[in-house]
Length: 149
Image (cartoon, rainbow, N blue to C red; front, side, top):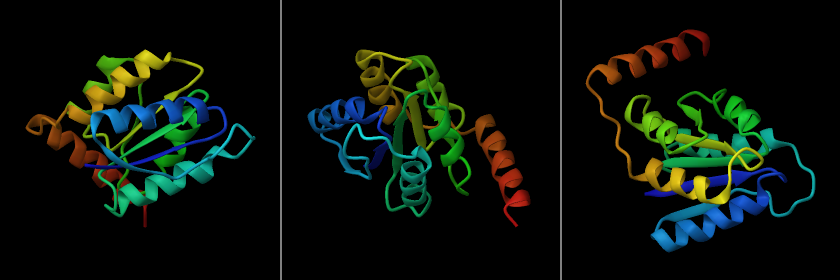
């Protein structure tokens, strides 16, 4: 599995820790920035990750900012992206099982490092359940198509 990862300045330090964690777990990833704590605009990095996941160059994406909200909102503007803002392991797991989320977002100011790592690990290992959930995900895709014209 190939992962696209990105952050703004507020998420930079946690992103660096998550990258090391991904290394330890044996996942391949590409860091789409930012490269420091210097102030940047989160939409620039959310767009890079989301576009690469949408083009299927990467299987999944991880985005980190201060709250996770801006990254999630921006990523979800890209057709084909189902970004989920998660705050704990349960929401991360459900975002995969029920919603087939392909981008995980979270806030470095909202959760601690251990929670972030636990969420990432569960989110990457959890498969989409399909069945009745597929019907619902397909309805989301239909809405996206309707408004992407």
